[in-house]
Length: 206
Image (tube, rainbow, N blue to C red; front, side, top):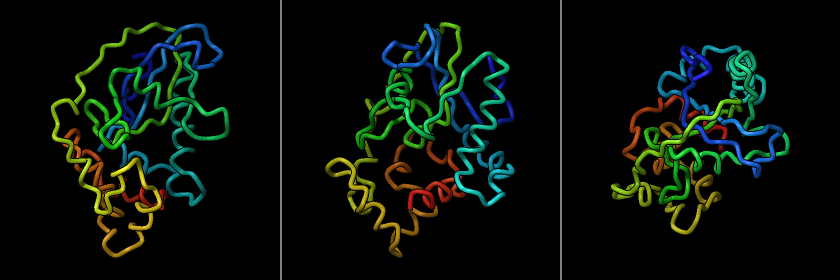
């Protein structure tokens, strides 16, 4: 790992080789997929100036500051899943890493982060790194995620409006404060994400 992530609240969630279809200005190399190292991530972010300053998009601004500072001295180039076009294919990169797959509810599921996996950046590095695929956890799982949603929002695709509307009802308070019930039902990485972090993301979703 060409970057030292200790103390940053971030971890390596997989990597994949760069392909021409990615349309990035590099010849070869590897994309390192970085995401929150939960539960250690939340206290780090919550102590940051971005979290406290009251300005928009604190997590995106924190990610840019921290990951730029990690990547550039190591000879890497960071790419983010937010900001203006062109938008980068993080879903495809995650699948190519051999560490994430489509779950029964279509959201990505990660080998050890489960349905709470999220990516804050992909850092291109010139080195070539082999991909070693992990076992897909869904292959041996009874799929509790598929039936855990209180409004059955995953019965046919993802009914975003039904999900969001439920969050504004008294019954939706559990999802707002604890995180998506379907994601929480995944046994992989259960209990890893702190409620305060889930509430932060659910507030942004609302």
